[in-house]
Amino acid sequence: MTDVWSFPSSFFWGTATSAYQIEGAWNEDGKGESIWDRFSHAPGRILDGSTGDVACDHYHRWQRDLDLMQELDVNAYRFSVAWSRVLPQGRGKINEPGLDFYDRLVDGLLSRGITPFVTLYHWDLPQALQEEGGWTNRRIAEDYVNYAEVVSRRLGDRVKHWITHNEPWVAAFLGHAMGIHAPGIQDFQQALAATHHLLLSHGWAVPVIRQHSPRAEVGITLNLHDVVPASPSYADANMARQIDGYFNRMFLDPIFGRHYPADMLVFFARQHDARMDMVQEGDLQAISAHIDFLGVNYYTRQVARDAAAADNLPPTINTAESEFTEMGWEVHPHSLHRLLNRLHFDYQPRQIYITENGAAFTDTITPDGRIHDERRLAYIKAHLQAAHAAIACGVPLAGYFVWSFMDNFEWSYGYSKRFGLYYVDFEDQKRLPKDSALWYRQVIAAGSVSPD
Image (cartoon, rainbow, N blue to C red):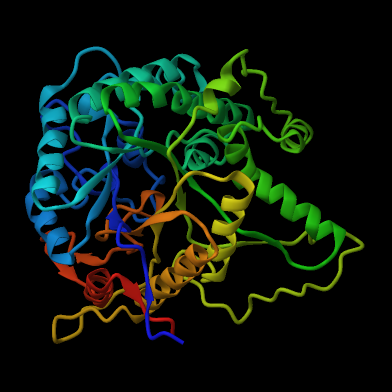
């Protein structure tokens, strides 16, 4: 057996962030209010009562942050653009200082030998558009395409990797069905409308981005799960299919030209009295616009158990001995291997990028000034091993991005969860590399990971 598993020489080794989670400067230089500005300022919405007003102050400290990325030796960085920093009202007049910020950021990355991967939408919709219904209003898809045109026209000569949306499931369902993310709505019908308009805006934007960014790769990032039944029973198998439809097939199927899954349309109608009656002629064809890659955000698997079924069998999958992260997510790297193979053989995307993978654990600075985050390091290593195994099976995996570059504002959890390779002291904004960062740098330099 070889001592190392090598990745392709063209492999992208990266890390990732999003605008609202790190930038701060929430109302500076002409930036408009976003739905996360409004949501985080509302009492009781965020676990620790914090906001993203300052976050990691990346808006002012971006040059030093890029220096740290260069020291980490990554050759790719995935970041998002804040729509309301570029178009404060969501449409209309461009805020040049906001667009200039991303201009400088892209140039700074390229000068350091780091390839920018730009996510156009990572959940921070301009509040002005939310006042008109946000993602539940069909007009938002047109506004998004206009926004995509503005950004790709400015950056498209240098940015050659574009992600239209990050995790539309989260924006649609956590934001509109469960209400635990902005804009804080609890209505399944609105969640389905948001789902469709998010996907429609993606499909309409793909050719526009290509027009302004010749020879670019354009894709979308989904949060996906390997779903397994807890037992061989029919009830658990049926529950697994339902969960898979909810998280995975509702987005994968239309993107890859299979329309919305019929079983899920029946489920939403029966269980939530919610219907996809907003779909118009030509929409599904637009949503299935050819993409150059599929971005996969993977953190954990889903074990499906229909506890209410009278004829259920005893579970054969027992997670009692499993390790869990601070998010309560089971650590199960083999499911990443299974998921990547399923995507390759069932949907056949031309390329796949793991656009997020990482773990939240409690970090402690030791007296020697170090952060020995062995559990995070082990998590990343095991998932890189799973990724390599998928490549060996023929999966066209072209890159891996650790979530996250640094500790940041973790949405409804505020600053209570840390995912970063770099520790951030949110009082003085100092960054400190964790052991996982030092290890990841060695892996990147070697282009390989050990198999044990």
